[in-house]
Image: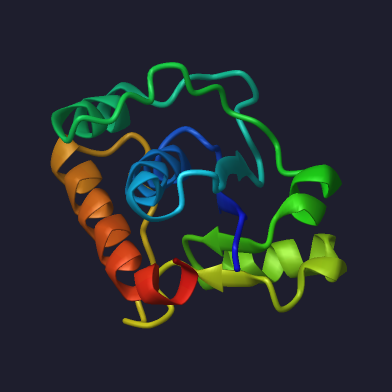
Length: 146
């Protein structure tokens, strides 16, 4: 059903790279040919995922060291079957900038009604909480997208 999944946050250096890496690893078990990508609304283009995000992902056996931030664009939006954002404001922004995305943009925390706060320049504990919410998002969406 969903073969191309896009995660979007603000800078594409914290939340969306963690979500991309985690979901990609989960999909290997269910649908190994699913394409999982991420981008930012105001991406720090070319920047790696921040050290805290890399450390958390490394702890769970996921390497996001090669990640390079990219800006969301028409090509990514057109190619995505579903687009996950971290909060309602991001959903509104994407649907405004890319009206053709309507109906395919969802908060990762939609089903349990939560946003994933931006951990940028926060403590490792805040990043860990962010990752826990990403995992909750997977649990909530798993049966709907696999």
